[in-house]
Image (tube, rainbow, N blue to C red):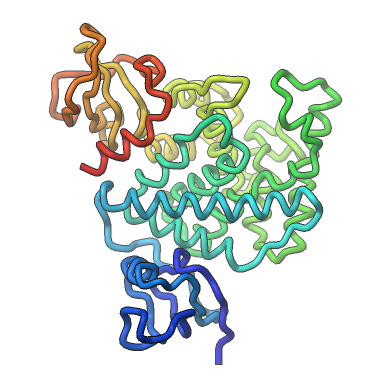
Length: 383
């Protein structure tokens, strides 16, 4: 008889076996209280019926959910991805805050969260990748970890890794900076350059993170991410100065995800680099990243990721809605602003693969008085 594990309905994923609900049978939509989750809609039906927590069969032989679910359109996936983002940030905040006060507690929640993130990415990767990238400067601390975990999950799927490796990539990415909880806040939050002494203190975080996490039963692959995400291909990284293939695969992937998210995120003391600029500079840093992995990563996120405000050669500004996978310079956009009249225009969807217009630059949303581009992107992408 398998043990039971209690978890929120938001964490249910296809293939999980529900054994018990927290409401009487008369209040839920299923014929039996014991059933196997067939699709994400099952979780929605449960929540709409007032169910908040369920007990599932907890068997060691149960594999992570398949990374190849039924594909969804971007509009269909955005709502689910938005809820998963909120839930994932809450979980990560709990883990990191616990580590800060010396009480890190990792349970089965994080792998379950990452399995659900993997499902969302496999159905439509644009939704979740965009929602974790577009955030305010005040959300950096926890959302950086969520973003790296999400990027790592999508990266592993892109490389065709096994479901277990996909889970390790996500969990390790989510916890890659846990060692920073041992670094004084005045160093972590310093707006200017660190002194050599402060930098030496900051560099302890990979070792501290590895020490913290190995006590909690993480796989070696996940531990490698926390320990080696600051190693460089030329051997000039830290903490061990590993070189080339001495650096584990997931750690080489994490180095790319970590730096990309840091460069493209807004901080209280710096503006974000536009994605094309960040990717261009990363490509120029010879010896830093695995060049083959970096090319795969660029194909995954796109030159102009969804949610980017761009200027077209026609003078209009447009929001990137989604990618054309084999034409990264020609994404699908929605025209929203005329720079000639300096006025908003009725949104017009445009697939640049089949249009005359071309992107000539990225623009800051503040250029047109827009301080939060997410609601508009969500609305236009859902149409």
